[in-house]
Image (tube, rainbow, N blue to C red; front, side, top):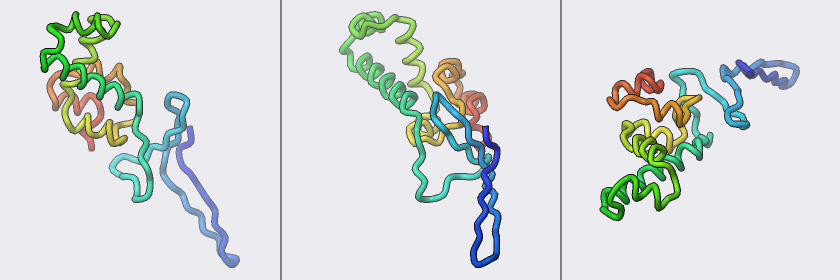
Length: 139
């Protein structure tokens, strides 16, 4: 894990050392740059959302929509059709109860580092508690 990035620049005999306070780490085998708390990425920087989290959220909302539209009479019927376990489907449907700002952050790629499906599954139902537990209260 790299805690800061330094770069020396020499222009016409003068040197300048630039230190950028970032943390570089690996998440799921990919490099991730974490900016300090309270700082946001500058313009021109593309944020990388966690595709698996975003995809899972989209899937959960789609499954909820199918149930609400009456296309399936129960979670059990939908689970059988999808070929998944009832308890897995119920856990996935809990993701549709996340605070809207948390969902938006995941889709935009601005979620706190280290956020995982496991943490989302264990999140409380109350939105303020979710924000606190998942690291959004400090933002």
